[in-house]
Image 1: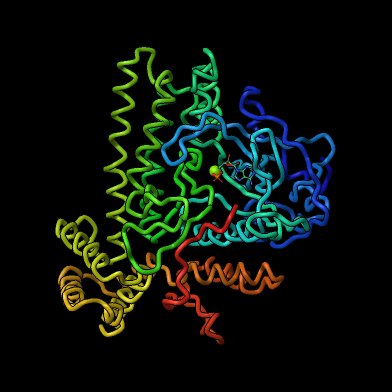
Image 2: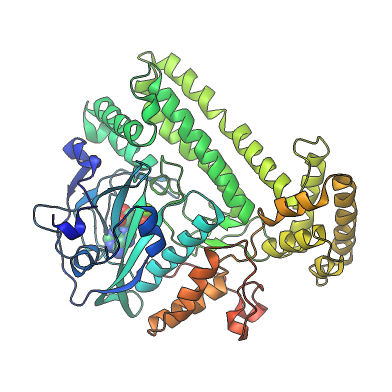
Length: 503
Ligand code: AMP
Ligand code: MG
């Protein structure tokens, strides 16, 4: 380690038993170049000014780490689209260290696209520039929206092509996360077929690592493992509710893509919905709709049940008692999710909290969205404008293309909304709604345009999009050109139907 990279210290993950990781070989790319360095995040993490040195560039591109340091690939298993895979692991990623932020929280630093590892199988260990920039844009948007998420510190171009259907520019993303321990990491630890009697020991070591990192207040408590699991359940419930409130579809909620920290992780064919469709899927590999918009909560519950199975030996020595405890905790998921969703919708709609009348009204909201396919973001944005004193016409225009019944429903919805919100302080309501309803989300057609431009060497559209999605509740500047309009939904010919842009 040298002075310029001193902020990257050895990760505490290395203290885990050797089964959990393996050295990641280094494969220096031919011509590493910064594409983006996230100065805002660097400051939040307490990195020194000028942290983006040539030495760091080399390390973050998958090249040699400083003397005395070694990158590691993490081992994990998982259910992919419901099918058990006993060995996955970082096939194109590596953990390089951790950063302790000014508040004292430690963050893993992980490279994605940094080359082959023992877990690569037939994969090339590489990533395309467009897939890495997509993760950069969408994770910045999530952070701007206040949704817990892994972040991107940098994207570095490697200068080497990556072969997908066609040759594409290659890149490495630096991901920052409170934890890279996935449900699949626990499945890996607890899998007795492979661990041969070591499962409970390894599971305990992993749980202790997670508690020390994420929930230190539980360490040493008599029911620490139950408390840990309860926290994972609670955070996941809140996380998925937050996704639903902004129309986010993760796309690949395999157990290896769900972190025990409650951060959104692994941005693949994810997307924000334009026109509402509760069965919306953007991933071309999800023909069955397993991870559709309205399946996300039940799937998170399913994944948590897989985690509970792994933790059973830690809950109690008696299997029956352990199972009872696990089920009790799992039962908390649905009400916790329901409460977080309802509370979020009350804010989005400016309703009085916990009003018994809200439930029926909210059921009507989903029906109206379903019947009309109105743009999800604009629906709440325009309702917010109505709350701010605008006339009804902008809101009702959203339903101009819908059938007569949906148009009538929209008018009735607005009347019911007025009834429910009457009497309360209207400026407080407007403020509440303004801060709950984003104006700018990374709409798929704008993301694709920004990525296409970046592939041609023009980073301006991507940087502009990133700057806007960081402040999603701010009115964006009036667009000078039509393609600068980040607010308007795509025209039919601009619509993106799939966001699986290769790995
Ligand atoms: P993901 O779809 O990103 O969750 O990846 C699923 C698994 O495939 C993980 O173990 C990845 O490390 C691995 N993987 C994905 N792409 C590649 C690649 N290009 N080379 C090697 N492994 C990969
Ligand atoms: Mg993954």
